[in-house]
Length: 148
Image 1: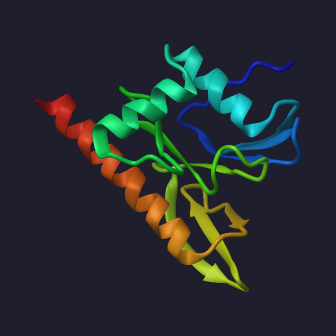
Image 2 (image 1 turned 30 degrees about the horizontal axis):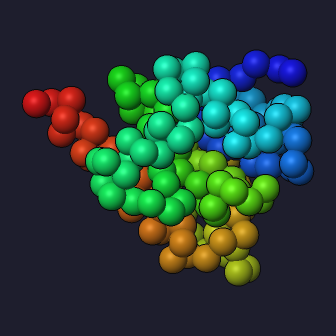
Image 3 (image 1 turned 30 degrees about the vertical axis):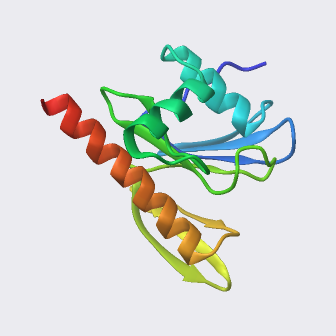
């Protein structure tokens, strides 16, 4: 198993199947022999928590209980949000701070990242927009607390 921790350059984690994922970074794309959720769990643990702990933290900060955005690492404000329930294999994870634009194209959503890379997701505009809004609220509360 390859060790991989989500970092500031990670754009998205896209599941291929139950045991493999594509990792998109600013300057690299590669396959990892881990599920998207396992990568999320390992990254949370690397930074001293667990996926469940991070989800509970989000609930405490903004009250969200389903499709919860999570803070992977506080000081660099690395926040990821899921496209589906993380109980589903098809759940993608997207980095909030690396998005520059998103729009609908052919019944799919295109997310454009800082490096101009575009990734299509099979979700509605409303779902993506809501997930970005939730993640942005989480980021705002985190910043407010850091600045106190």
